[in-house]
Image 1 (cartoon, rainbow, N blue to C red):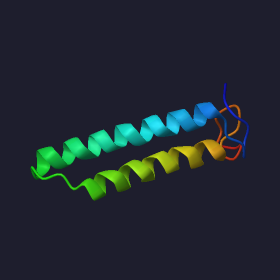
Image 2 (image 1 turned 90 degrees about the vertical axis):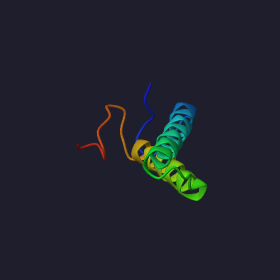
Image 3 (image 1 turned 30 degrees about the vertical axis):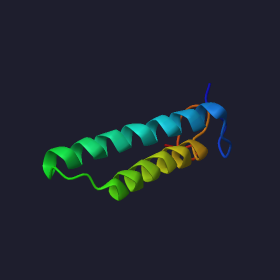
Length: 71
């Protein structure tokens, strides 16, 4: 069940946390493959930005999944 526009529910929070963890894992793997050195600060920044981006997207999305009720 989707939350209403300008409202969040626990499902949004859990999915935002999952997105943050997945983005952190991808950032970790990318750093390990590209340079062989892990920049933990960058991994944390990517995870936080991804999680917050997902939460903001859900905050501005209505029950039908339309951003600001239009897109």
